[in-house]
Length: 250
Image 1: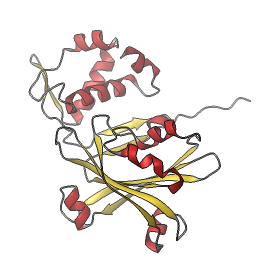
Image 2: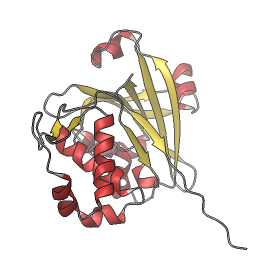
Image 3: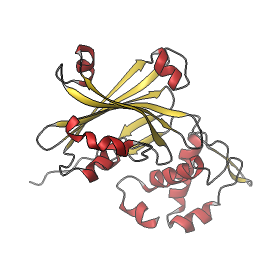
Image 4: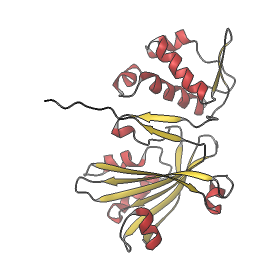
């Protein structure tokens, strides 16, 4: 664990917060259970007391723990009651989902893009794709996390089978299987109202606002070989990307 905390580019307290959140979501730390003391967390993760306190502050702000003077820190919820924000500074971490969630593939079919879909996908009318649809769930029947549509270049349709109940971010599983590396990622974030069908799948009311994330993966030749669109119900999740300026030498 110490190696993980030192290798990542984002602040240690954010990494530690992610670890603790994952342990709570997975049930390793159960609701009503008292967390280890700050001293024990310092020893376990080999970090400073400041790092531990800031990580616990993130969990408290998300509504997952309660801290009481003289009584310790108690887990009060399996999932955030307020939107949890992930801060990413590196390309590999962009829009990853918590490891504890899992993707359930519901359908796979080959489609030809019509005018409406072409505008949404920003591709030519008549383009063919393998379309896979499914829901990403919280663990242990914790409810739907988001609805996802994955558009895959038919040349790579042999990858469709590996997506069944796949828990990893789709792009990094593809990266290991492809000879070409992912050279560029384009991300578009949009607020929209969910249709009645989508709202039903996500256990929300029709017309509920969703946070729509469209991500296109390109090779070094500029070819878009995969597009995924995820619909997150209002309040489920938020994203923050932190870029650090690198000064150019004279």
